Image (cartoon, rainbow, N blue to C red):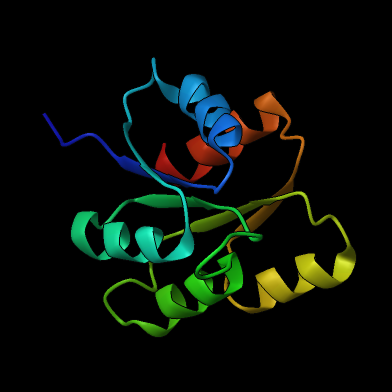
Length: 123
């Protein structure tokens, strides 16, 4: 049997992490969490997740800085990143996609769309 896909949930707001975690706790995914950008980078390098759900507005390192680190590292750049952010302006969305994000979901997150997108990349 193959190993469970690893899903890293990155958000500085514990309620948001809990919400996403609960959406996937009955899934076949191994769930990993991080609460700021630096913790996210540490866990990405250590755990090599199969997908990252990444908030943008965080302390220490924001999501754009994390995305830049992921996409500039040859060992990490193939990891799909879905931005999950309250920033729903087109400038942030375009910037995220141009920097290499695979998708961009705005908060409040639509449960069905979130599940569909994660399944799309991990299924």
